[in-house]
Amino acid sequence: MKKLYVFFLLLFNVHTVFLMEVKHQHTSLSFKQVGEVQSACFNKDDTELLILIKTKNNFIVSTFKNDELATEIEIDRNCFKGIASYNASENKIIIQHLFSNKVSVVDRKSHEISEYLLPEDGEFVCFNKTETELLMRLPYAKCVLMQDINTNKVLFSASYSDPFVAACLNENETEIATVTCNGRLHIWDKKTAKELLTEGYGFCGITEKSVSFCPQAQQLLIYGASPLVWLQDRYMSKNVAKTFRHPATVMCARRNGDRICTMACDQKIRIWDIKNKEIIKTIPLESLWINSLEWSSDGTKIVAGFGTTVAIWSCED
Image (cartoon, rainbow, N blue to C red):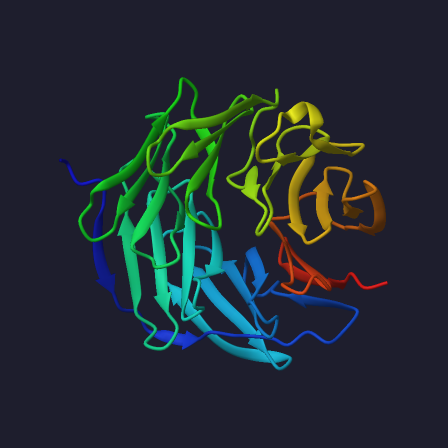
């Protein structure tokens, strides 16, 4: 069987990697002299903030802790757009290169950078928890693959008549959800590749995170080029899904417990109560476009990256 990707290890000069403890109701961090913020997220105990910045040609992986910059790692290569996140044990940082067939993994202790090269049209989705398997989309081939990193064995493969624009793995790593470019949702059994559910949502998928399993809940959060966000029970039709209507197209949606935060094209972040489908907080933005929107683990804060700024808001009453 032809290998779908190769692995090699690269070493770079380290400048720093930085982390931050957030204590304020609202905090803004400016990187105007550095570059554009690509993504920002908290670690599990909300004591660190991980930021990915794009300079003219490179990515800079940065973290904050105790209100100050801790470290920074520069990835010296031609980069376009990316998303940085922690691995399950938080001893590594995963950098997804958007619109590229590469994913970089940074060891936080040694600062070594491992790079995985996917097929030419492959796009990284995620690793499993043990980092022995890799889920990828191949838009031109109109398929989704999960592969063993060490043996290159294909563990899961699913295809459809339209390209997949989003995919995700559930918490138990037993199911994979996908969304096609025409807004069709599929849920697949990871072991058998059997299609468990399919639904048409009638929108054009716009982001690699248009679908996500909600942790510890049999539900999926779905959005696309539409004013609607759907919260669908895993085993039920979209006809009984909860919908959250916005006055403009939704660009991003994230869930934390019994709340959802969304960002729409009217330059507003909204926090919704899921049970009552009511807006409990609205945050106006200065920018029309944000690159990332994430909750803190405890649900008390949200962080957004837009332009050269990272902003953190308190969500407590």
